[in-house]
Length: 516
Image 1 (cartoon, one colour):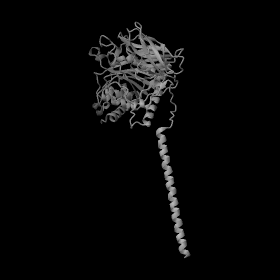
Image 2 (cartoon, rainbow, N blue to C red):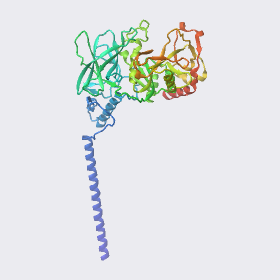
Image 3 (cartoon, rainbow, N blue to C red):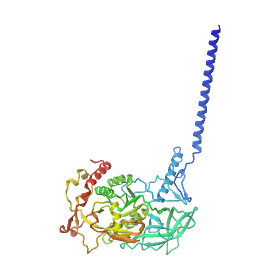
Image 4 (cartoon, rainbow, N blue to C red):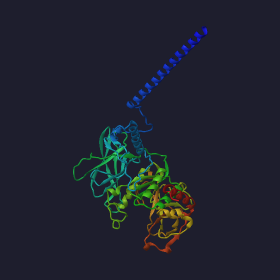
């Protein structure tokens, strides 16, 4: 009897313990579910505050809400809105501090901003970061605005293309505490316009004293002959070069202006790889249009952070010339606006690069003793002190004369269009009694105005480098009347780079174009 009672009591206690344990687990599960529901509800209605380190915005800059540019339907989320806000703020920070980003438009025409990107607004006016902004109804086109630190008073300098015959009064419009402030500007048309109707100009104004920091400006104008408002603007533009750096991200930057109708794929890759061999770290390409294959090559170098593409839409607004002589190449602006692009590039990289080279894609500045630019420039500074830049005389290698060396032309290269620079080793003799073209490498912080060949205004001018020390190799077509076999000199210096150049070029072509 006692044993049976104890067994029954033990079973009863066990069942009671099991029920209690089950109820505890059920309560715990219920509490967890309630906590999860509350957290989810709070996450939808009160998102956590996001802090963006090292990103500075102007108090006059309005960051659009995601409802300004995204659908408000059920698929719109807080995450998408905040991602776009981050892009806006980071984009503004990058531009103000001259930080370039990778990526490029796949189109073969002029690169244009995507319509899907959110707009940055200043005083309820959108900001346009790209060059070529039309000023009202006038024949003035803004290229880029920069802080000029080298004057007694800091000013804003804007590179522009203007109709030389149009008489206008220019103004700089700033957004200050939510209000537009207009400051009178002065302008100066560069002397090198080659008698075309349009020319490059500098529009300069002082910064308003009421605002400590200005990240954006709009150039406005009114005719000197009739009364009109100067406050009617369609967009602001970023002001670059906010801080004058003393340590630069790049030692050497090459400015290429202007790329148009480009299909010379092989020489493009050869030139880029030669730049790398010579220690160039950045290439800025002012691009109007190119072939789809060329665009693939450019995209590759953009992704490698070696190339920056600046969209050059000048032909959309002005009838441009394809040459430098108006009688030979009709148009209203010299050679696609090349001079404006060169001036913009010098200012764009003034505090990003120790030196800037102004040249074309079919030109290479090559030291004669096999050294790189990194080794060359200190030597030039020692020999030619106190100059703003160095001139390198052009040596023309006619494209019609080839040296068929199988070792310097792999079969792979036959599958892409373009010039093989290694096949051109006959150069024309320069006449010392005549003007010979040259291109330059400059210290951009000593330069105020540049032209196609040389400087118009600088602190120190330029000096011609000894031909036996460094020369410029220029591969181009030459008319038969200017060509004489007896005046050609064999120059195989480019072959000294073949061992490094050939495999590098082949690797790029295989990787980008998938050819073997």
